[in-house]
Image (cartoon, rainbow, N blue to C red; front, side, top):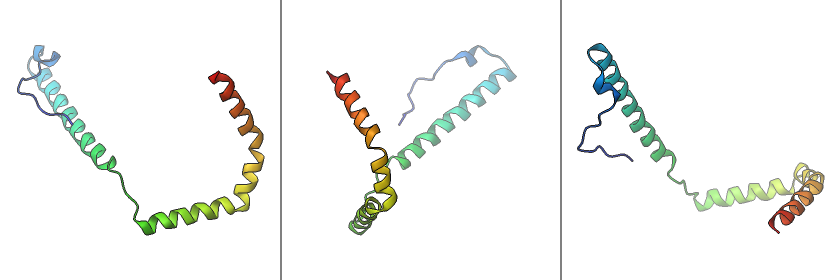
Length: 95
């Protein structure tokens, strides 16, 4: 997060006079508020949610059920040629 410095920032609005300066300063204040709100939102979103053991077990069971389903198995068979070609291209590019 950003921390306010003891020095005041001097930008192009310092050269403006009257109403133009007021609008520029108001814009700067709005941008500062927006930055602070986005930083707070980022801090809130970036917290990692840990699954409880029950939720993790449920998610694993759903994954097993999905991989056992007919659409999953058909999709895997259909995409085998593409996966083989992609793997061969990766091996050749790493050499």
